[in-house]
Image (tube, rainbow, N blue to C red; front, top):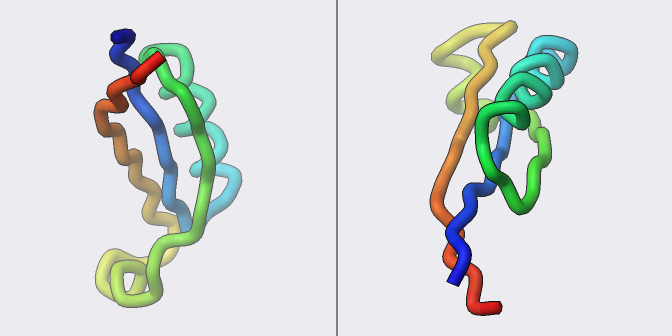
Length: 62
C-alpha cells in the first residue's frame, strides 16, 4: 500500500489561498488538492485574508 497525503486549502483570500496551495504541492506527496472558502463561523473569528492548509494521510488500497 502506498501512503500519500491529500491537501485542502481554505481561504477568504483566493489569491493567497492559491499561492499557499501551489507552494504546498511542492512539499507534499498528494492525491488530490482543492480550494474552498472558510466556513462563515471560522472566517468571522479569524477575519478576512485568513488562509489555512489541511493535510491528512490517505491509505491507498491499490
